[in-house]
Picture 1 (cartoon, rainbow, N blue to C red):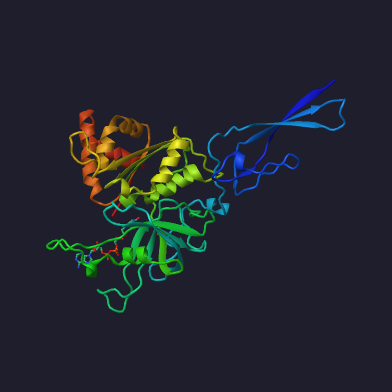
Picture 2: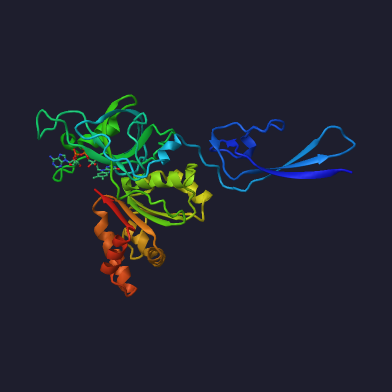
Length: 379
Ligand code: FAD
């Protein structure tokens, strides 16, 4: 009598980070998938149909994919998860680390006002950091205000996870906007007054050396104690940098100790669609994790707010204010990053919304700060 046995065997198989089963190499006899990354929660069912009439066993293999979404990317070294506290000031401004530029890539389209670049820096694993921290960069040359001394350090939020864009813990990425100066009288660009460090970074070439200090900052670290938490991220322009790091850690990387199942909600304000930053990455998360990710864009020069004015990030927040307030009441973290000028408009909007709801904004804000739900890094 023929009988069949079903073995459900959990196996860790390797699958390309940007592929699903059809591209994988599957061999019946020695079960192997060839590619870079590891999946978790993938099961193979082996139906072993053993007939007495046949001496050779017949295998019927059915695959039940329990994790339908795209497999996450393998990261290393996992020892980067071991520390209980974030690394801080490993390299001081006076004794910086000499890192190497890996790549400099323009992020924005031709119709964007201004230029923003994604800059990958090789630190050889020597300047580790956590998501939400910043590096200091000391541009080459002499400080004009202190002849004989180096320039002052400039801070840049790190836009990658601790594993970097190559997932090996050896690089850090920055999102840098080139600071230019327009003469208020003539309206013309005055190159003699252009920003020192941002121009150095945006003009740098692969192989160039860059002096870095840090890492620094604790206020924008991603709290990971509750994997079901809500994180509301508000950014203008390059303020999106730390959130790119958070979101790669949450949705892209296979971090054994952090399995996110909460809600990450990004509000990004920029001038127009050509100015959007990392939009492809964020749109992908939206497709792949619709229950865990929301993404709202405010394009000030292309969209109108409810009163017919320019659509700023606070107008987008106002559209969803009931939900945002409810989430905050339930313990959501809210983050603000970008230009200093963004805060007054946002605070006014939040105050207006609170008053409409019969709440005191001042009390609410104190509570959010007391509960460590309020994270601000503006520059
Ligand atoms: P500077 O040389 O410092 O000049 C500053 C400004 O003054 C420029 O706009 C310049 O054009 C203007 N200027 C120069 N000379 C004159 C003059 N004579 N008269 C009038 N104006 C003049 N920036 C990012 O792009 N991305 C980030 O992720 C980022 N993260 C940050 C995080 C933190 C915590 C902080 C504090 C800042 C961050 N910044 C970030 C800002 C960054 O540190 C720099 O301030 C920015 O790049 C400008 O530096 P710079 O050296 O290019 O300009």
